[in-house]
Length: 315
Image (tube, rainbow, N blue to C red; front, side, top):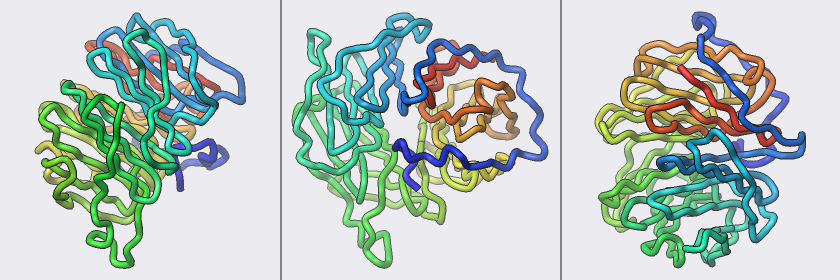
């Protein structure tokens, strides 16, 4: 299943966790659009926020996600991933679309050298960026997105039949270490800009989202309620039982133990780094699909999804 397109299975009925109690989080809809709108990804750096979605929509915030306004986009291709770091910004999406924001705050297209759908992008403090996408696409930029080159693994080394898996999410840290996740439960890592790749995990369920923290704790989520956790920076992973078979689309966590997972008509959170899980039991969540999720530093989670909605979830 392709989790980052308008073809997300909106009508799917999910099996709720039998043991999870309703969470007492405050839920506030900050912004809502029309039924034809959809936001797929969100990023926050300091007080600045960006959210992107269908038809090239870009929303921006200057106050930590409290208020949002639309930015002019140079195209109508759906944008499926966004990255924001130190004033630099990138967005990626359908047909190999890569957008970068210039010093004047205007968005322009960059040539990524591919027409493959791009699902995710990550940007570090040095201006290195990695974008990932359909059929094994992995691209690297050393100049904040102006120029790109292919660095994909030799996929035949990881799949018996040589399949080129969709790669749904990626993270590049400030040392330049790249970690990616995708189909077949694959999590791979490269410490030398894609020169060599190390297999960290493989399974049956596709992984749609991954979040690694600076303290070494991280999570990856995907099909059939799959939740994986690492405590050593991604070197090893263990499966957690979150009590659901839902298709899990997004994950983010912060030091102190809070984890938020988005899904289709479902949302989960933990306050103890995955030892226990609770529903976010609110109609603002239960009636919609939500995908992108991030946290404001020292503040609430921000979630985006169906109908162009941006939702703040507090403690």
